Length: 89
Figure 1 (cartoon, rainbow, N blue to C red):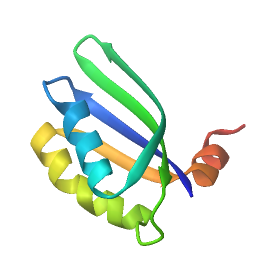
Figure 2: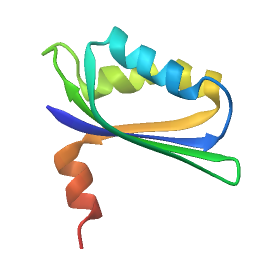
Figure 3: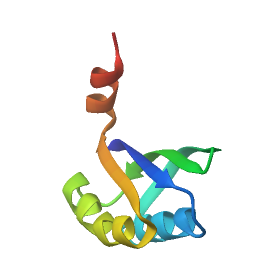
């Protein structure tokens, strides 16, 4: 399954490292990534592939809760199909 993850919040050191380490622990492959900084505000969008049938979007979101708290970011993940449907006109 392909999913889209967004990470947003004030910039600080280690955001990318903490997010990608947590994904690697869950055997989630990063297919594509875009990241930008604007006036001290960090935004990252990741297109990820869930390789392990035991890994679900819910499990990833739960694993990201401590990362959200530590990095003071908002992290959301949803299936690519849902993301596309919600962002098309």
